[in-house]
Length: 93
Image (cartoon, rainbow, N blue to C red; front, side):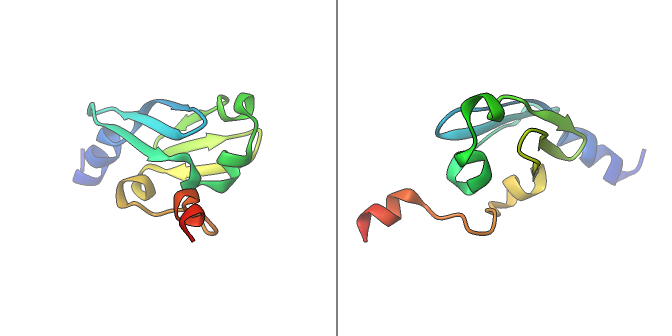
């Protein structure tokens, strides 16, 4: 197995869930990621039931009902979706 194959296997999502505030993902190597849902405006605006239908992919997550994809790499790097804005900052201005 190559280093890339090992890295992909280690960062493969094994579970994921969304609530009204966060996206939480557990990786194959045991790490748990949690990011604010506002990072992904399409997810934040989706109905709660739509956010619960998640397909786990080798390198990320897919929500078929809203056609949204999030890569594990983007979560690890802190990359937000285009148009994402922190609602707390909006309240302060």
